[in-house]
Length: 247
Image (cartoon, rainbow, N blue to C red):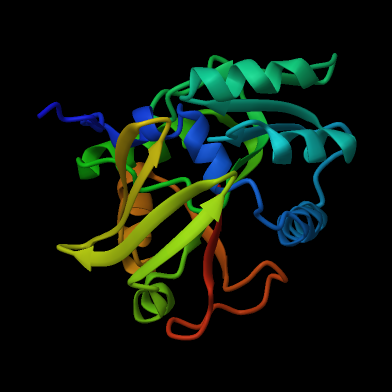
């Protein structure tokens, strides 16, 4: 019997994020909350008019475009060639999209670098997370701010939905979630046009203390920590997000 399962790439983020199925599964995300957060964090930072912002791990550039609409000069960067190819349709004089590995510094510096909506901690090797922070540090100008918006692990793990089936565009995505050995996994299996697919999202369960240690190693100064998109105080057990502001 032929095995129709398409194998996942060793680096899951390189394969899964570059498939059309990733965008199909998450197409119904509510972006109102994301815009609220962007409004709040840019106001809080009091960025200069026409500030230069890097949206790191930008996907198809939805948030980069919104930042650009607010008047900022924006570069959206992502590892996915397919996502960047689509995003490039929206480029203008103050909005640019590039394929980029977040572990590498840019050859220019920014007033702010945003890494939003749990787009950190994908790497197997802790040193790659450190390299990412060092790259962010080196890509900020003297007065620049970095923002990492991550899940609050101690809230997320007790609230994981172990199994569900989500049907989108006539595709039934069978999803399992679990935590093992310091990583949070999401297994995604589905069938389309006679082929079976299997992908696994894997994110390191980084807590505030882990980020503090990495930032100390990277020579980064943590300035503030928020617990939600309204920028309220972070509470380890009840906050939904872990939002880190640093320079």
